[in-house]
Structures are given as structure tokens and as C-alpha cells.
Length: 108
Image 1 (cartoon, one colour):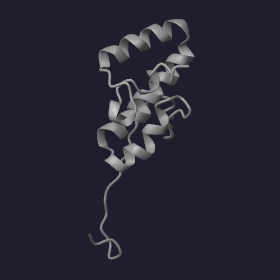
Image 2 (image 1 turned 90 degrees about the vertical axis):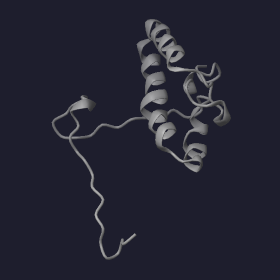
Image 3 (image 1 turned 30 degrees about the vertical axis):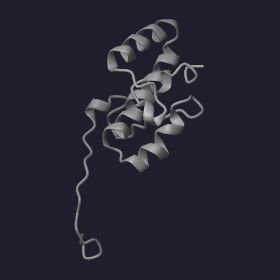
């Protein structure tokens, strides 16, 4: 139902099949939906922010078409995984980082 209403891709651009709304509309929708059902609010938040957000901000066109478009109508729901020892559910406490290392096999 939320997908049919365009809520699962509120800030995703219309060219990808999203609603093309701003973050104010997203915040209002989140508040109203969460007031009625906190679980539905979490699903909406994770799909729009934690899943779609990084893809929309950093994904190239091909990645967005493959990994954003199918998640806008509610048939698929994006997820977020937090797994770092000692953090529990506090994503802000994450301390793992990654570094690019060039090797003889990867000299580009």
C-alpha cells in the first residue's frame, strides 16, 4: 500500500519512478505514518533513507536503475545491516573503515 502511494521512494527522482518529493514532505509522511504504526514508519524510513539514500547520492546511472527502481513501488523493500562488535544497534558508534590498497595485481 505504501508503495502504491509513492511513499517508498518519496525523494527518489521521477525519472527513476520515484515521487520526486523533498525532505519536508518525507518528514511529514514519516511523522504521520509512525503515529499510526511505528513498524510501518521504520520500514518507510529504512527504505527511503538507509537503503535508497546512499544509492541516490553516490550510485551511477546503471546502479540506480538496477538497485533503486525496483524498490520504489513496494514490491521490494531495502534493508540496512549493522554488524560491528560492541555497537549493538548504535550505527553512529561504527568505527570500521576501509582503505584502498594497491597491489601488483591491482595497479590502476
